[in-house]
Length: 498
Ligand SMILES: Cc1ncc(COP(=O)(O)O)c(C=O)c1O
Image (cartoon, rainbow, N blue to C red; front, side, top):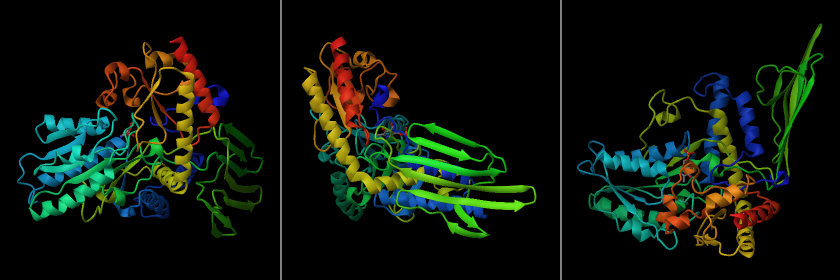
């Protein structure tokens, strides 16, 4: 982006799609449009794709494929996890159902989808809710702050893995391990099990996420925050040929993506295979990758048809960006045997009855591809983001007096910088002075229209005035050095003029 005088540094709000992810979604839109529940071959093609994606998503978090349920996004996954954990305690005949008022613990810096859902349950008198407070000096959460709130009625704890505004990582593994031991003794004393949920929307693709290590029962997965880059830099090309005799050709080019079509009209769906003389061959898929397939030729008097395609994925300039689609999933530990999942949507029984509604195959396919890229490249992503973040911080400190970087703690996300601009200047004014050259935010994207200082920043120890001077900068996996230099230059000038 820097080449055109702009720097996108708002990756915690959302991410563009990886060309590989675009390729898989496009192919799925064209070839896997059948209803995954249909018994015929087009239905099977779609349901096979969903099965493959489930395995890819599971591999990313070291889970079993059976324990993944696809959903619309993070909000839905969070709410389903919470209502499922709560339901465990109110289910008739369960040993816990004699508990009068279930007790739930969460932190005071959760995303609104967690905080608001639980607050409504509390207002309706359905639960007793406790908020564990993060440390005012660091934004960190101590495991004891959560565990000390546990009582005999506690049935659910929900703590996010990484905070979307401060970038601070929460001690999920420590809490999970402590709960595992605690649940053994609670079971012996006939007390309800405490289920543990974490919202991993901001940590996937930025740090290692392993559900076995974290010891969680539920984990929220969100595609568009985190997932899916090819290499550092990539390239996607698609060349299609075919059509009736005399068909034309077309070319389409946009940044990071080119497409050449020769021949005008298609012939049914591309089904992703090579067909020669009635014999079928699977598509080539070499490394990461080029492929050729789906061609066919027919000749009869006065009529001829030939079609096919060549798809190429290679490197493109690193300023192009890319991640996963706007869809999500919920991990549920030992879903069919151990941990309850109460569907939010009832209906046709898709997703084994856990999430009704015809599956969005192309987006699920894209999520699977994005997850696979995380498995292959996480170390590279982390290294790149950490290097860029450190360069940004040290260059900003060199250039602008009186700035402060909030929440410089360990562990934290490698891509997030909470920047406090100098006194007597507001963050709003500094961003305005950037004249649209820097895409960053004042806090969570869903609060960007609010004039009030961020409640998350204030809960994490900043005064209202300091929160009003804070800009959230979040770096991407392939943000080039030149974009960091550009951002430092623009922010320095913007602060001087503010
Ligand atoms: C930490 C966290 N959880 C959940 C969500 C909700 O995700 P979605 O808006 O995709 O439903 C977000 C998105 O902002 C988030 O940052």
